Image (cartoon, rainbow, N blue to C red; front, side, top):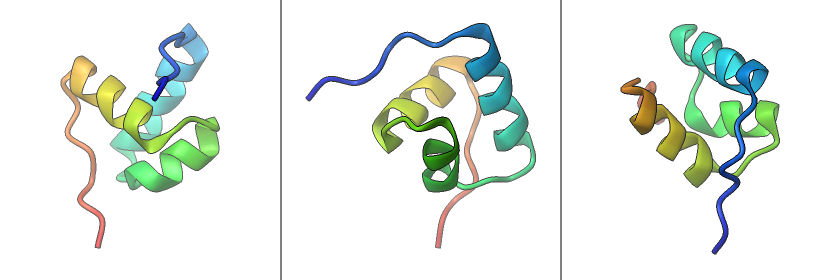
Length: 54
């Protein structure tokens, strides 16, 4: 499965701010129109721990 790896500066900034607000990964993926796996991978790469869903 191919994961979108091209992250623009704007997309990364949006990802950071949504994660900082405590937005779950599933919601962030919908907002950014990217797969959950891609969002999780980018958060891990940035050293950001996402909010636990459930």
